[in-house]
Image (cartoon, rainbow, N blue to C red; front, top):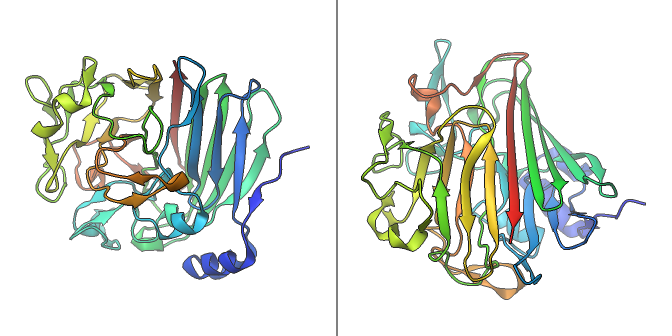
Length: 361
């Protein structure tokens, strides 16, 4: 029999309904677990924001630790602003001045990051209740699929959009994410991202400056002071952004900055095409490693530059550089940059984003 989801109190559901929509009152928010056969690799997810809440993996000695930042309760995810583990959209990352022109028509998005739109607006896909379409925990490759219908005009975006995300333990220590979205009525930009914060020593264990990082990208997209790409796709050679060889994160972090904060918050143009290796991370003390594969043109390396005194799971308090994000994605502000890979999905067209995280120790 399928393991039952952990359900929330009715009072909290009412609060969530107010934060979402009239329909949300008839939906249930739950926490769902997937485990491998051995029982030493598991994840927990919730249909609030299709969020990845925990990833428990062994180290080289078999000791288990949760390697993603997050919260203990759904209420904290509702109120949080760091996007811990969230499925971000309709368009992740930034859109300059919250506006774009598509097929000759101007669109204006919700502004929530200075003068720009960030991660789909103030109530993007990370701040809504998703429907659980399938939950299959008891099989060789357990999985769960969430669904969300984004309506025409939501946060300023054009057209109705049907969105699905599947989390699956596709191998003994492999986590696969499959994201797809179908445009139903109008052309629209789409860029879906999983915003997990990783610390392979264990969440709340300190900073990630000793993590060794490799990003398979020979180019990146420089940004202006408001974190909007200049439109240039520059080479990393001879810059602190060159992570093509395995590099201690702390060795260069003081040489880079973005948006007024020291640290990486950088979109890399991943080398090659199709489904390919994007990045590799290893934490020397535990021996844990994570390999990232995806089919998207870019990956955002973010080193938690703005995290400060954030109360997380199990009483841990997260600080600056306490985790890193590797967000496979389309390029930021691509909807306003014709030289960037297109993010436009036409009616009847399907956006697809496949991501694989391979853990080892």
